Image (cartoon, rainbow, N blue to C red; front, side, top):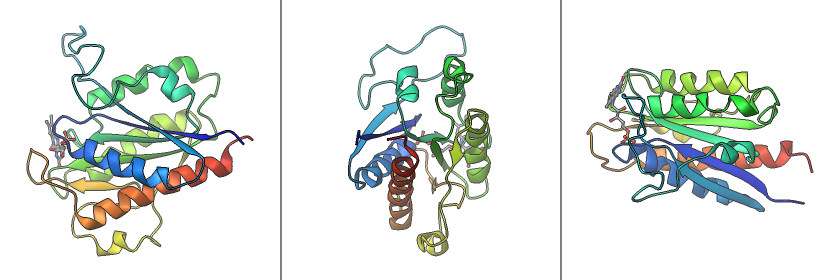
Length: 200
Ligand SMILES: Cc1cc2nc3c(=O)[nH]c(=O)nc-3n(C[C@H](O)[C@H](O)[C@H](O)COP(=O)(O)O)c2cc1C
């Protein structure tokens, strides 16, 4: 059987969402026969001109449309910006129309992850904002079931709609133990579901 390809794609300015992506990838990697591709998104330009080099100075390669087209399962992450996904993430999603009508993402599982600097500043709303375009693609939304006891134990991030991180400071200061477990559970779940749903 061919490998199951999981795409973990994110935008992160200060490192919190990037740290989550690493643990989500680690969780997905636990599932046998899984190939995990991690991609970041460049800063969106207000002037509508390209502001980033096409190759990032550090971190993961930038995401391309083919990364979406070739995935069997998707984890997409964003900081909460005004209770919604960051423009960089929306910009990438708006570039996916070539694979929209052909249904290349249809019937594949997707999940979202997010970081926010206040407890009630939009964790769930940010996840939900990413869910909507992916439902239009026909993806199957995979949240986190409460059998993950860290959803109950957490005093910071973590929602059943998708894992989140509470980042009280601008600079990344670390994920809680519960947030790490939930990131890894989310990654493992998306890889398991993708393996089950994949056409052999
Ligand atoms: C433009 C902007 C808007 C933001 N809006 C929110 C918000 O609505 N709610 C919130 O809790 N945090 C908000 N934040 C804080 C970020 O979501 C938070 O710092 C996040 O952890 C950043 O993730 P990163 O470290 O991956 O860049 C905002 C930050 C910026 C720069």
